[in-house]
Image 1 (tube, rainbow, N blue to C red):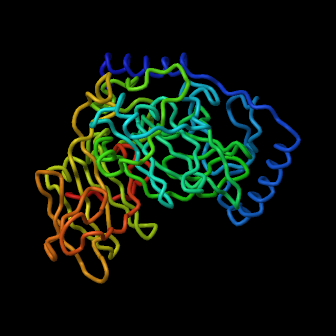
Image 2: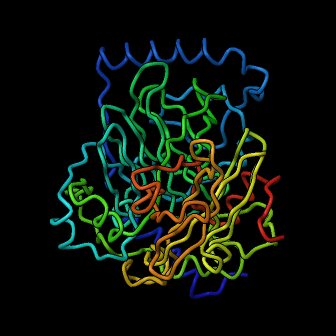
Image 3: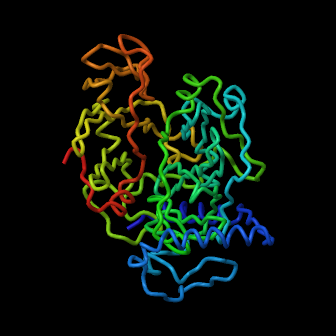
Length: 406
């Protein structure tokens, strides 16, 4: 059972979001309707092969006014989707993001602040969780690529998606609903509903479709600033929010059932233990607890025949611990890379200063997978798609997962 004070804190956090959130009114225009109709036709054609996965049409057990979603198409039972409190767009996405320099961001961010690091075509950006904890979705274009940068606080899930579907850029918003305690998004073209954790469309014209994950990493602002002095940092939007504050105080110290999660708990780990989840070849799934990786510094492993290394570096605060994010307890940052480089298999070890060394060449590496000194200086390890999550959510969406250290 949840402790009474934790229930109050988390309930207050949701109420705070409800009170502060600004719903965005959208006006239909003939041009917008035409684009939506074309996208719906494309989506219907592309998902024809998925018809067998759709459940029989059944009216949803909630008010659908204000939605253009085709609710006759869905891949999950209605009782799996529940209200999180806020209405459609009640948690406002950031749709016209502005950016500032590292020096400007340093005036309000500390070295311990967690940020989502994402780069494409030389365009390097950091998205502070101090902002995303209030907005959950940033619709952006990085290096010419439309992307959706997302964060679900209830699952501690930071994921970046390619926002192009069938050649068309899409923006996403929050439905105000959850599945397995995870954010359910919607696209603003067909208003199909998408699971943030898996990138799968659950309801609407796109039901059965899959968004493409993009490699990203949660690191400290200090590490980002040290490596990318000319990088761009998401600027605080012009909303009335307490950026830098955490409305989910002590949430990641849950000693029972997480807030708004009704599924079965996998008791191999505490529900809100942080894990980095890896999925290779579509059906080989493994979770590495932060605590285990932190103690070892590095884990040299093999999954589905692929040699990988899991790295941990200290210096990053939890965004879901104390009332002020940068004062949160130490959790560090984790990254996963392939160990094979130019035909050579590397074996890594960690050092107290946060650097790493491979045994084969003695080269020095950083948490971003860059060789910064030694024989392989200038080389880059190939990143493995891996994301930070709470254990309960990873296990709910991947019940077949292996657990390192079992």
